[in-house]
Length: 325
Ligand SMILES: [Zn+2]
Image (cartoon, rainbow, N blue to C red; front, side, top):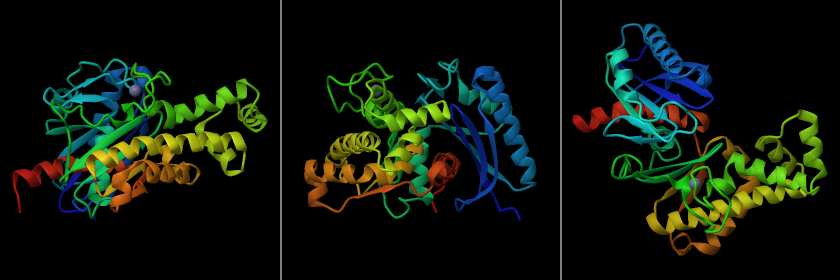
């Protein structure tokens, strides 16, 4: 049975393109998951997205569509609806993505940075549904950040705020993809786990990781996590480094914002048990605000659906702000 009305959320990732019809209560009613054919070019990805949206609208029959929200991995200028600096979507820089999709679909489209969308999803129906403000870090290939203040995404001047993955935690540290040295992304992302594991293998420190890499052909952060759970010392040290680094970053964020909730999401958050003890110890040691107030630090409640649900909430929220109850 179809709901009275619905919105569509799109999670446009560098690897996966997921599109869902979502009820006004935040339940996924229909979902389509595709690969993002980034190598085939921008037109192909736009065509795939628009035809999947068309398919969902057909499946939803005559139910009224309240709008479409799209979470995009990259820095977005909300005034122009353009994407800047998206390493996951080569060829999309300076492209008027919002206007183009609105033109094709003849309906209003809301863009949002993917991590902001994930934070909004957690606020709507996830870990943060009972708080007014939260801060989220999405731990994937890179690290995204989202900040919800008084129920709304904090956008900064033109929509580029809360790039929390590029907080410096070591001024002379590892080179980050953004060009800075020592960003948290260079210590606590899946890419960082892989870099540390490969470095350990190179100097012959971990026979277990080397054997695992040989067995599957390609090492991943998930394999390093499995080895950490099995008790491999080097793999455990890597996840402790992840936890300490996140603890350093979260201590600053807690001291700055004094929010009730900090959420960790993205694929790497599944390694929670391997990094959380060192993370919590670090925050306890460093943050005076954490010691003096009640602050929750939790895993995402929505896992990989956070960004999809947050994107679907964009038109719902825009409507409720324009027409308060
Ligand atoms: Zn960076």
